Length: 440
Image (tube, rainbow, N blue to C red):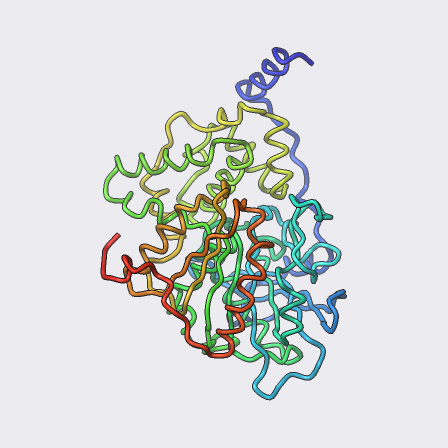
């Protein structure tokens, strides 16, 4: 096929209103199929279904779980995930809990990492040479944490196996799912878990982690299956925070227009980043039903984005858009975004709250990260340090990409985690220039 013919073919698809066949929702394993038929009723963190699963991690046992959570608007939801715990008898004081929040895997019902055949394993990444799956799955430092005697819980988030649509990159919802996963793990007696908890996450999960850090009222509310978590710290690997990028954009219409167009430009440099943008818009309108995809995309683009994201996971989504549209993917966007003020307010509301974190936060990042622009967590640090928080940012050695971040940072934060669990004091990680009451 010549380039000219291919270009004409793509252009015809984009502008002719060609429809695509609608297929059934993606198949999910029996455990998750049963979960989708359950009602989101019960205490936050309450486990409503679990099953034992195998793990090759020495000295460990594992379970798939489904538990009650809630979203950014306090609507009850069901999240799925997995728990890995040592087999040996727990100490009298109980085991510390490490609650993991995964990076982007997609938006369809079959995209939860716990659904793969052997999910209770060390982190396995799609892009890396050692990856052996069509998706990222597994948990960073899992074997090390089990050796230390920790309980590890990994949420899938809502909408990735528990029914309902996934609120992708709505950090306020993802952060609640993370908190409730810890509550769930502690409630299961076989884990031997104490209430001492550290949250950690990467990318989307990094955003969930720093969002959870500012959900003090949610953490402290009574009536969950486990109350009074003893939160020791937060480890965020390349965390996203869209809200901090546009924190002042809701002051007038011109600012809102500029902010939305800026986000579109920032994430439209290639089809991979555009897929993340489309997923963010899709997930945001799930969380805020007053929004419409047609505010951001053409009518045809809205249909395509909805169909693809309802049925496909991250890398398949990018491949589909690349195959179908090539470098013409931006033609799916509306010429002039509509309802921008409502979108700005939703993006801010669903992101990290401008509230002082309940415990120290440490961030690891690479200079070659093009998936989550480092300016996001740089602005986050400035915002939170101005409130008197303890936020440290560690630049990884060398020129590390987004996808190298978990592996390179893994050995670096192990000692930080051990020190928090041991109760050792932590130095304030804010730059000296940010330890004042500056307003950003």
